[in-house]
Image (cartoon, rainbow, N blue to C red; front, top):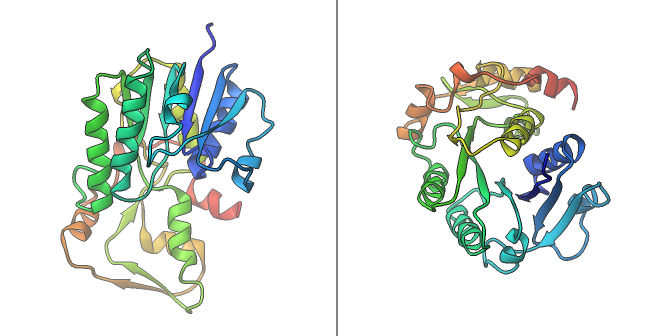
Length: 257
């Protein structure tokens, strides 16, 4: 089998590190990690020294260095996120660099389940980034994913100084472990462009109340939230119950903290 050159954006982030570890362990390919830091950081140090992993300096917000990182890549896995409107700018720079690279790399984009129904501004930016990719002329795969275990853990941990945990009433989540997402992405890297891949959700749909009590055993206060975003989540717009996937439940995540 021909070796591939794979570029991972956001490769020093929560998902990116898990994906790079997976690629380094499972593939005989050459993996590049796009990082803004020219000097070693704790995140890059965790990747440095792994076989077939190369750190490439570049900035998706300015486009500087992105062309060099993309050059010769067979597959790009776009995990980087700014958690805001800058995702559109970053994705445009990446697409432009890929189009100018002299070949048409397979661009895999990690998006979020419900970006087309939950009216959060961040979700709108992710949807716009999806559209940039689908209209780019590049071979593409978009993988929408539910929330990571880590995200819910951060929400609950932020309330550690009060004797209860407050959650929105009626909210449910289908959290997924980044190791399971990395496994799916590694399969996509090895395959052909798939367009909109089936959504990816965690193994269980749970109420936010249940997840909060599992994370920390204390009283949970449920507060109704107004607005279209809360209504869309209460109605399950953030869920993919027909696409449950993964080995690691939220219980496993909490037990392994």
